[in-house]
Length: 325
Image 1 (cartoon, one colour):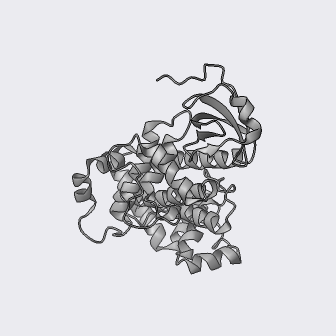
Image 2 (cartoon, one colour):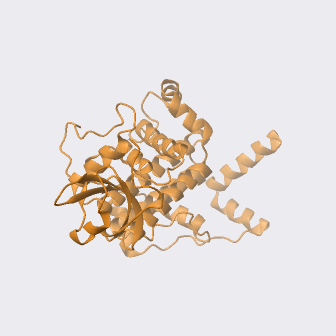
Image 3 (spheres, one colour):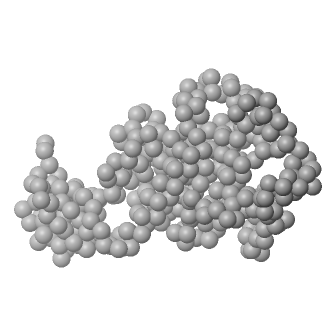
């Protein structure tokens, strides 16, 4: 677009913000239907918004824009209504940053990423709370699925503070463990982008661009952050957030229906057998299934059928159960 036309358009947009009557007349002449002045919120949601200190007017603005648009990210699978409300609100806040004409262009994407990360954090917390309610199992899974990470990103549990729940675990461990535990493995860059959102949150969530160092200085000191902001867009972040939500929804759904997972015998004794799967703490195989592992040894692979978090069957893999040593 010609620079003069772009400047003129910017002035028209600014005038629409300053003079609602001008904006209404412009929409009328362009044949654009006028949206209702306010979008009604349920009393429960409005009460929650007020309770957590959200800007209800901002939420209404985004709802007004999105009222005829099917949201890309759905959180219907989240059973806990407080968590679901929080995810929906953060998603609306995220989109408000992308759509706002009041935020400087260079600030919109980082703020968009901050609210995207809030959703990543809440999704992972919800997932781990549902799948690993026992803290010992959670920590064992984190150790198992971060052991391939470089120093500083391997979970050891020695964080200097007690871990009573998943909310006490730093988010980079949760991100790495989730991505590393998937079969087949997730795209490496997917994990890097989720971690990039964490970097943006750390850089900006507590400052809101009012306290030095500013955006430019932070990016100069952190090249990975600079690359993340330079090579990602609203589209790539929405896509990753949707993928994460879909993966978690599928995982939680499959937890309640029989499904097969790869496993390994962690300990084969005379009177019992322990198996490991999904990065969990070794679990004793039910006695009724011992006959299915006759002739197996410690370290051998097998396929386990899981339902409601319990082993209900053992299947012999098509390949040799022996693990190469």
